[in-house]
Length: 168
Image (cartoon, rainbow, N blue to C red; front, side, top):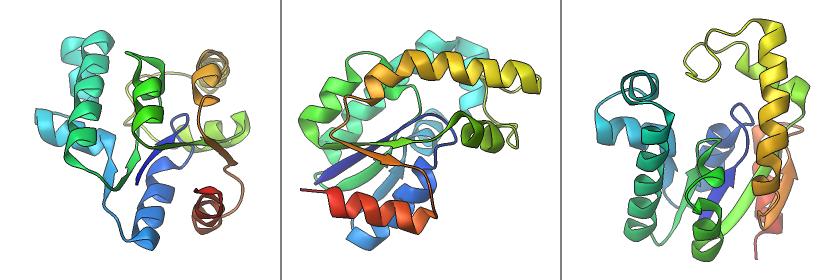
């Protein structure tokens, strides 16, 4: 079984994904880490050097590689993965998609504490909240194509448990 975790940056995909994979005793891959290892550069450097369009193509290529090389895994995708290059359709065809839905306030709280995210690094608090709302409105239609939707309320263990209960 392949489980693809979707959601906006800061929703908890990596934390929940690691717990979920451990509980199910299957491999876990964080897509951002996979891309950084494959490219030998940080996500921020890829964005700076080559731009978002190039990065989205790398995401698509990495998603295809991961699908081909793993029959069973939990994959924490980047927040934009479902929104480009028919990736959402590809994930739905090749596994179970799970959208971890978080409130604007929770996303803001988590993202504002991090400096490594290239799309939001230089934004003021007001600009960051505006950015989150705008992107969530644009991305929600992709996220809602997931087979399973769970709220990000509670601990990572509770979220992982809710996901497990919803798996076929």
